[in-house]
Image 1 (cartoon, rainbow, N blue to C red):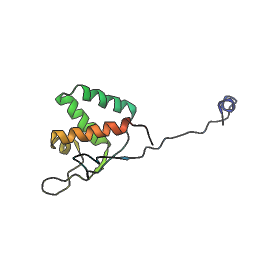
Image 2: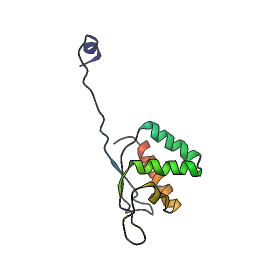
Image 3: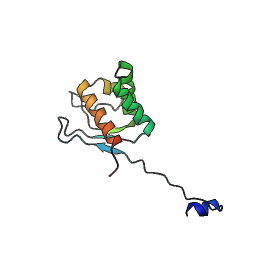
Image 4: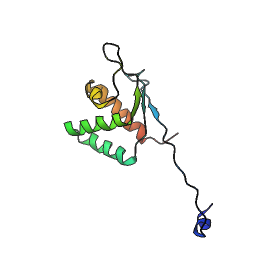
Length: 116
C-alpha cells in the first residue's frame, strides 16, 4: 500500500527491523579467539558511547562499562583460573584496561558500521 492509499483511509502495514545480536570480530588482533556477542542498542545510546569515549573520566568509563555489559549477550572470556568470567560490569572493570578499551572500541566500531 502506498501513501495515496493510506490517505484514503487504508491502513499501512507496519515494519519492525530485526534486532539481531551480532558478534564482534577480533581476528587479526592480539585478542583473536575472543568471542563476544552483543545486542544492538539505539542510535542515542551509540552517540552517548562515542561522546563518553571523547571525555574519558572514571565516571564515563563506568558508564561505558555498564552500557556495554547491558548489551553484552555472551562472551568466552576466562579468568587466570580457567573459569568463565561473568558478563557484568564489575567483571569487565576487573580486566586489564587495554583489553577493556579494545573490546569497547570494537563494539562501537561494529555499531557504527553499515549492515551487510
